[in-house]
Length: 232
Length: 406
Image (tube, rainbow over all chains, first blue to last red; front, side, top):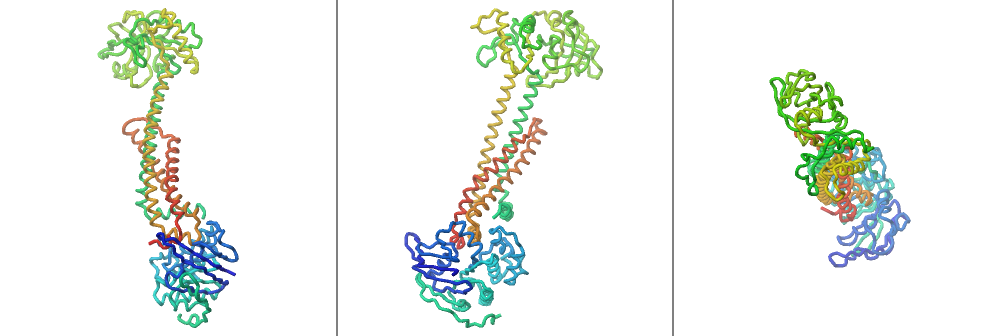
């Protein structure tokens, strides 16, 4: 089992008001799955992603990542897992503006203490952007920037890629390209969990989890309605 | 992340804003330059004072007639009282074992004429031991002898300034005749150049035998100074006390009374001068160090701005696996590179400023490795100290908040 959440609660205090972002979430994800988490804003799906990405810790409940209990992880151990086992893709790309595409992809390698330009180039190639390696993010289109971010998420060959609204800032054509890329990567064995509120985006996934008010209200498999790769 | 990688990232961040980096580190540059310059000038001053005092003669005690009337204040008549004699000098030489040589001097201003040239200069009657005791030797001809002293010979040894005045043609004065207060003297030697001190031009002098000066020129039987060369530098104080005891006895001065002479220890004078210059140097360096600290505050200020500006970058780095320590190091290295870089530039500027002071003002300056290392090390330490807080702030950022920061 790759990911296992058991009765996970997350409670914040914002301006003195208690916010229950997660209210007893149970979720199991196997290696190789392609899961879309859906729900209206404020439903707790982003908080759930932060917990899954070890950026945030549950208030109560248990999170097992690759069979390992994460509640006792030190800050350094969590950083190490984020570095090696988890890849992040964000809505706003979050590339370093002054670094080239290649340098952005190399960033996780730097923190892993690996100097391997070929590996970063290979990751760029796998998203079809090898020819853009020397470009700055500002010289790339939105879809290209997001593909660079995906290459960065993949370069360490993580156990799971977590994508938070990856198409939120893209037009429909670029969105389709990015989602096809996720689909292809998933077929090649990468586990993908993505958060979205768009049904067309979720349609690319093989399983759809519905959040509402901090709880999972539906969890169903999603048969491939769109023939894979047909939009290309 | 390796230190090497941290340095690369930090250099890149600094190069992204070159003007800002330069202005940030300007305080450190000025501080380090000021420390290096002031310490160099101080060290130079100390060295030249020490050199001048050493040139006066090493291991030297000077006995002057007269009284010190108040602590630290030289009394009226010091050097002009008539109680100190050549006999006192001989007694010191004979009965104090630590004494290597003794010289006595009586000097007075007199008119000196050679052919068409004339000069009013200091005519100094001294004993033949004077060159050895005062570490001051003739470069041409020779000094006069004990025989000259006994016979009150009319021989003279002239200083370089007198030579230039009386023999401007450049001919050798040795063997020539000069008149001192109308008496004829034969020049037998020329002294080496001593240069001027704060006390006046020491080369403006004519030496004659002490007995000649006392009897033939000025009609006196006392001396103005007795110089005692001590065999070992470590026994200066001891010998000075013995000299004082002996002269008290000879002058019949009781233990509880003020003596009619003063024994000055050259080492004390050197020490006093050295102490003064060291104090002044320390004071200047302390002021310069304050400017270094101000420079450090400037670095902290800009680093805090930089951390805020790069909040999102910090979030990204943490998301892809940077630990708190990695982020801390990145910003700390940046601060230290700023301050150490400023330190390097400051050292260069300081050395250049010291050289300029030497060239323009003619002051001796000595750039010591100690001063350079101290200033540079202090600058680097300032970087660590003032970089720590901004780096800590960066490292403590919550990645979720940082990633959402606009």
